[in-house]
Length: 368
Image (cartoon, rainbow, N blue to C red; front, side, top):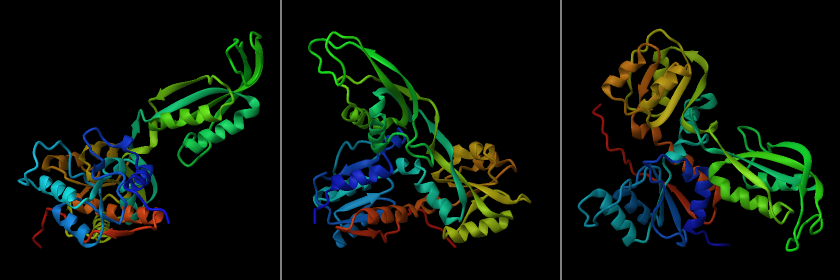
């Protein structure tokens, strides 16, 4: 049985949540450790603290996969005077790899927010604030006899996926003209002779971060010595990528009943919320972590309630009797991310143990 390296684990995690989708301030990826390190076990946690490192060591896990990066900014010294320094020092001393999968996991359709929706029993999910400028379009010209094989290669490389549809493309037929010189090695035609060939213009959309992979696949599959193509970067909203999510309850319920359901489903000790009022709750917007920036987007989308965390006092006024805001706490809104990641890693690897961290890293305590 082949041994799994950290690089293999990273590749698989980034197939789920590409780092290209993280926010600019974020620091997802391999924080510490070697890519060529053989994985003996993985501990999955929301945060990466010293207590989590100790737990990993005790469970023979040499990789910690955490949602929150332990490093957001560069360290100027390593003397153990700060908790971040102590975590990094202990990880290096014990040859542990630390990997973070943060806002890129927040921003994908199958990530943090869908997990919250599933916990609440919601359906008909869609991204609340889709990202723009994440897509590109490839146009190329292929001999008609080779159009299917070239498109198959492009689809295999990740092109042509739009929402619930795959293998999407557009094709038009035409005539290509070219004249090879003496140094050319043409697939069709002869040197110094103008050729006219039946060609298919193919167009496919793909995630912009896959550009090099898509172009490599095109050139490998295309029969021509010189491949004609061009790229357009699109401003379209990407319905698969973005902040927050909106979905629906099976049946509308009173605001007070929804809060009880929310408390039970998310295993909460308390909820900070605006007045329940008389409005029934059917459409629910969610955002794991700090989501107050999405209040007006949730209202515009027709949400009856917005579940998130880290609202400031004055931000609750923005509800303005139009929506029920439920602040469930940062840790509480994201803790089920550990379950999501544990299940995903187990589905993809069988050569090592994957452990759900038992350390409660929540820095906030409640007096009940």
